[in-house]
Image (cartoon, rainbow, N blue to C red; front, side, top):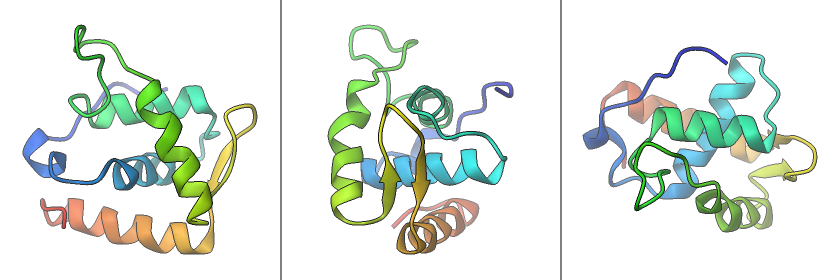
Length: 110
């Protein structure tokens, strides 16, 4: 993985966790990385450390924060895949991820 880069908290603190995860998947796929569960935990924690850290140990990622949202994203048909294989964006998911990326570029989110 590349070096750890995080976004300023004020940019993402009001964003729904689903949006942060979609952006994480989009970032991995856009950088031609496999979106395994492990890579997704890493990228989400790297980009959004306050949203994906353990409450008692803020320097460590909490993979449990991705479990239910990933299932919800699958039910909403925004992603496909599972923790045992890889995740990918559906056509709808890619559209939503592009909207989120655009909002980040404008330094705001919804």
